[in-house]
Image 1 (cartoon, one colour):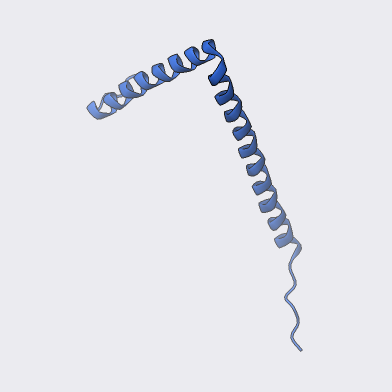
Image 2: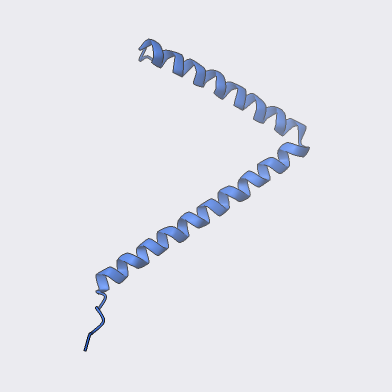
Length: 78
């Protein structure tokens, strides 16, 4: 007669931690999704917010381009 394998308490704790991590990750993604939807909504109706958002994006693009150029030339200064 075959017996079913027993699952150790340590294995059960490990599985619970894995499940908890997945749940936390899902909750984090849900929150990020809600924030993104709020930003998109506000971007659609608030001209001041749109201007600020666009200016920040433009500034980020300029700084990123500068960083990439510094990396290409081998410069390592701030």
